[in-house]
Length: 252
Image (cartoon, rainbow, N blue to C red; front, side, top):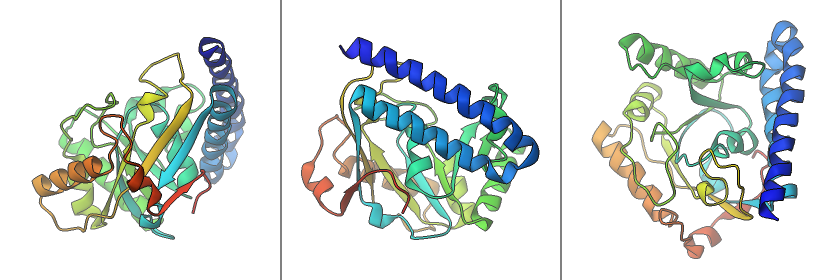
């Protein structure tokens, strides 16, 4: 049954992606300011399909730690493609830091930059870092919520990966508090996994880490906040999720 539900979801995913990608073509040409709306609508369709077809629900705790409005810097764990969708529904004007090569994906790729997303060339050249910081400057000026995955790639649940220095560079440049976010999305929606498992994906938003820390201190603080969320081993600390917890994917 799980295999069949996963098959139906994958068909839904590709149909929604094709439909919204085609919808985005004239938007990119004639109304690029609406590109983020296309992306948000696509994410809503995909996540609705995951709920209806796969029985995947989302529980969000700590939304009070997100600013009511304006710029923010969010450092999220990254376990699955779910993490690249959910923030389109949790905050009003997300700006993901994304791998620059994704802009070459047909249909959706050319919409990423018009939608306000920030490309990162992982070659780590000086020019790439400058481009990332300029993108962060624009996002902050536009009052966007910047989301970066400091692990740099998808990591299996329970695995601690070394964090990349990009989060420290963004924090120093923007002078924004860093909002750490833990998730166990990989338990239901594995990395490159066809099979989707019914269950609850937890997204735990921790208290902001104040600006001004050194790179080493910031990375340690993010890792500690992720551990405090109680999700690292796939075991959920229910006391954490009862405190200030909300569920649903409507932007605050």
